[in-house]
Length: 275
Image (tube, rainbow, N blue to C red; front, side, top):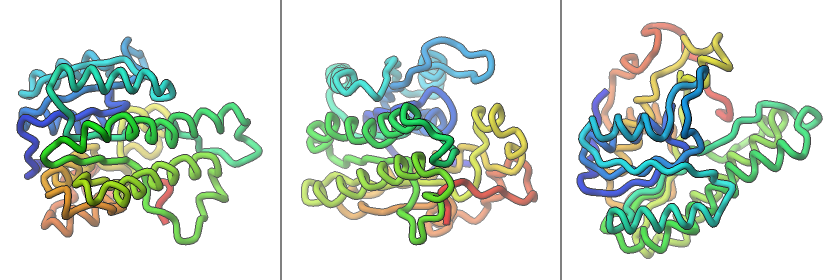
């Protein structure tokens, strides 16, 4: 589960990186010597879901990177602006923004009250937009700036709107942000891409909330390896893509995807929002 991407001496800002995919990408960046900002809500240990900004910061330092943990709620756009400014002050710039923070809401319309709708929209779509808004002035000064948003390809049939309307709107909204930045900032050399898993990613959250699917998923390292290969590409040449981890890695020449399976050889569960 190695990666070929290089982010030496670059600075990455990750929202929601205290566990799961965000943590895995943070550690992959750290192994290249990058400066990594972990901006998430989890500052105190949770009995059910391990991992805090501080524990991941320690792992980043141990892996060879420099860490800056920040407690952050992405619904607070002023706090995002302050966190980005602190990042630039600490490390001299910003090279990578990873929009990873997300709230899940796998319910239909009548089971999703407006307060829950507002929550997923504020965290997923608005939080992504706000992070981009505050990060882009600094990203435009970087040598090879990348924005990576963990969101699905835009739907062709829209079947997920009929299953999880609020969640689907919010996650596809993140993708709209990714594609919008790609087009608006293409000539300014900022790459913006979306990345989504084909299969269930077996994070601690899946283990707690969907234990029946945990053994049918893949390790978060598959997403980190895909992310690192994206960051290694010239920003001006690789932007505006909605990527699926498995498809992208195969195109990159990775053939042993079974190495990522929690249970090698087993049938894998597809992730939601995949058509």
